[in-house]
Image 1 (tube, rainbow, N blue to C red):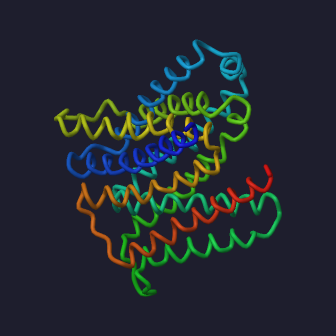
Image 2 (cartoon, rainbow, N blue to C red):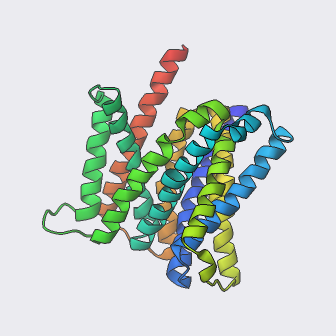
Length: 305
């Protein structure tokens, strides 16, 4: 029962992540709300909610929490993670959605997981394993089909969308790699909570979000709720809860439902259209992520047997 609930909660987290990108796309396309403002709300409000959750769960400031905030080196790493990880990932993700659509943008961003594989191979000075080679080939082929429909003569997505997608993939990798030391020492929930707060504050100040105006119609309130609360605070908390119950490898595998969900929601809500070649390209990219996750799962099982 514990595992079944863990699987269910992790699936809900992936679906919420997929819905949040579509909601952000709706706010930008139909209401002209700036991506900077959406990113600010998404990170700062989610950071507050995440920190409240951390304090409620530990019934106050735990010893690890106190050590995190009382060590100067940790604040340096937190700021670095917040700016070059969270804020950069959030802004570029919003950018690629605005330049294309939520489905395509989410799939392109997920190429960052392949960049992590390449980075690990380089830093460990080893050749990619067979599964990693397969994943890289799938990802490159899928990106080629998604961007060109198999023709070397032209792009079927705009150069702007492709550029945003490339940077979004890179920042997803930095977002994943940068907090490794902090998360290992203090746990993901409290590190992500402070990272979101710092990133949101930085985006708000640098972007001067007070300049922008929002007309809070019912649909804007609903879309912002999905983007900020369900798609960020609830999804992140649910995913971490799922990780605790079914393990990080299985949770990451289920998390690959996000681009599939984003594509489906984008077609249903925004009317985004995808050709057969688009779908094949997306399937190949998601397949690359699944390949890595499945191999990690099998390896983890061998270790524990």
